[in-house]
Length: 125
Image (tube, rainbow, N blue to C red; front, side):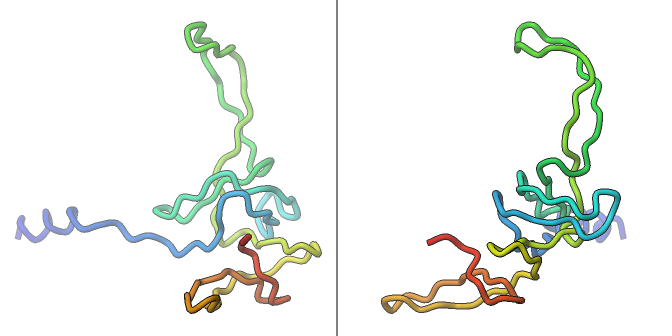
């Protein structure tokens, strides 16, 4: 019995399917910062959360560290937000879900992210 429990902890953790990438422009659709737009700073696929610029600001007390050049005080940092609470913003300013389409160019198949509402390609070539 103990062997079965120990084996369960050695299994790899499940990752979330997040189609957002760094530097995507997203809009918050729910939560306390609903309606805000910002750029994606960080994507964590193991927890299913992303960090968006200017969204979910938290205050953090920082100790001064002259060796690293850090000034003490209260600093504001972005906290993570769940990926289901944001939607991608297309070039015309509309929010959309993200889909994937395969495109063949020169005999090579490539997966490309698209906006479901407009069909616009989100990946830069």
